[in-house]
Length: 139
Image (cartoon, rainbow, N blue to C red; front, side, top):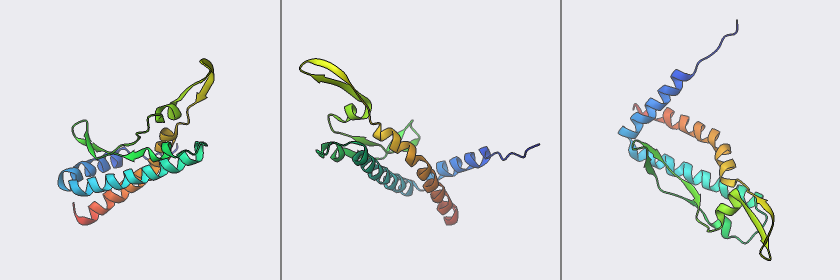
């Protein structure tokens, strides 16, 4: 019979520590989220430069890191988005029109989606470091 290791309790413990940290040290959590948002923004810009071949600069310049906000009334979040008016077309795809006729469809590059998936593991590692620092401080 194979031995299995259940980490649900550890995961719940980490969530409880983070919840406690939001109550006891909201400034540190906010600072952490701002730092992580900046990291993700850099990653997204780098991926956009590699995937999108047209180099006008407006698409890459449009990536921004939002403010920390309350999500679902008790969770904190930060957003990375692109404010360029044509960003959604590059992200999700669009119809290619020439002389008033649709001649095809340009597939979406999915820059934000792929960057978020790639960043997920790094974020969890950084979050574990934050939990360790808070335990060291005697939270």
